[in-house]
Image: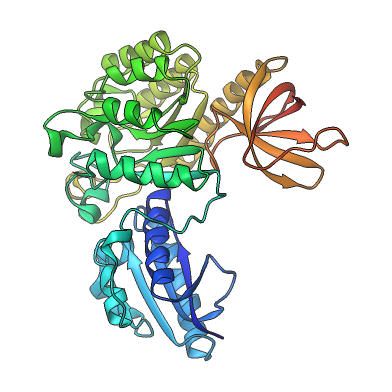
Length: 434
């Protein structure tokens, strides 16, 4: 057991990861050594940053807490703290059920952990982080919370109202990260499209991205988690004009049936969705669109599901994920609808729509054979260098595998022109032009 050492475990999304990285930087400033996501506790203190989005994520977070609680009981850990989304929402219940935890913090009051350890919070370090990602890319959180009222989503219950970070604070963070060698930025938020409305009384995402693109050293900017209603169309001009803004957009659409969209409280229609997708593809040639769909929401009958499948066929998303509806406590759906679609029907629909998308993704990947793309090299793995194109976000999208040869000594974190020679369902293969 290492003295003055803290292990931090992050559950859930990249937004949680940013919170962990900020906390790690504060711990380092306080004189601790810190490890992220260790296989088992190494130090005297452990902090678990939890996820509370859906049932599976909540269960995973609880199991992780129990594992570390057992380590504490066995004397392999002295202090255990829990923070994050699950703790924000179920703090009292968790206290009662897992008394081995020394203290629970929520999503936003984790600074109190430093005080409880007898350490000061350094406000001058508020835009600094101890990166857990490879040093050439980072996640950049530009806001917290969400003002949407989607029927199925518990996130606003956890994170509260949308709060945008000031533009200058974000740009200061990007400049600092760029000076440290970060070249690629995954811009994240619960809802990117809402950015700026609270602070500046207008949508400011296009202006923010344009200013980010002007910073020296910023080579790729990729956008995650946009919302289709009231989409800031000037963003498409920025994507088209700025070569370091990737032709990539992650925009969760959830469904296409008007009946289901109304039940979901999405405030967008089927016709508006099709129109937006047409605008995206027309204004930004070669754009790759990532989306998330939901099956089994109350009101989705066989006809609505068939409509969703036809939507997938027509839209031909380059990237798509899906999940089955589950009623989350205190959400609008849970209190206003009966969850009357059997789980086996939901799972069958999920499997069917993912099989459909897998065929589309395979066709799109095969269409890249013979083309040359700029690729970032992330790591070495066995006989291959592993890279990504501008159309591939870390951890969720396909990768490019480049076989090692005596003549291709590639550097991690550098860009190369890669000609695609073959394609599988989830990966591309290529050769480098040095």
